[in-house]
Length: 227
Image 1 (tube, one colour):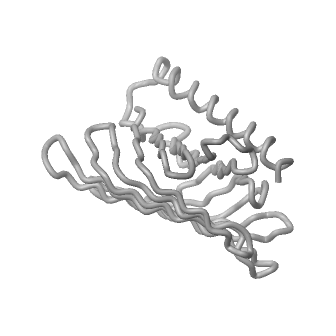
Image 2: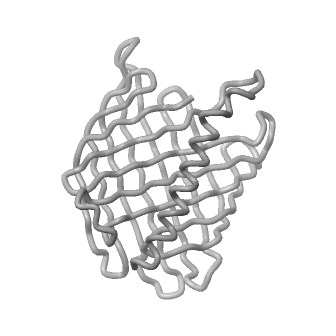
């Protein structure tokens, strides 16, 4: 597994650096237009591992049907043992067919099942209180995996300044060729939102391989919406 981890970790680090540079310098040359989706980042400090996630959701231009979506994350034990480094890094280009419905294609990589190009479809819905994104993709390699991914947030206002923040996020990867479980996780968050800041309690429930090796992680999370 170590042979898989190091190259993928380098790819994730490079992607995070490039995205960070884009977020820092992009506004300097941005043109006037409708508000752009923010870039949420989150850290969770659990009883077993530290977890980080960044969501990038951007259109090529304000009126373009093409966009980029990436929900990349990694976690590691505080002892910094490379065998316990875990990462998931999909990068998807999407083409909007109509509001809320899009075709997607790109690549995904994680340390349990490796790298693969993928194709699929995406459904999304968002309003003041709700966010729901569901993505079904198929792996274009010999594993013939299928992946179902979802993020669902409920964040109603409690006062003019404070809101409730809850999130359910999951991924399930199933091997169509062998009929086995490949990788899955369930992430739960509940806390408070104040402007760009979110914080509260979190749980990450991860399972690996056909034997469904279980690795839970419970702790405190803090997030920020970068504009």
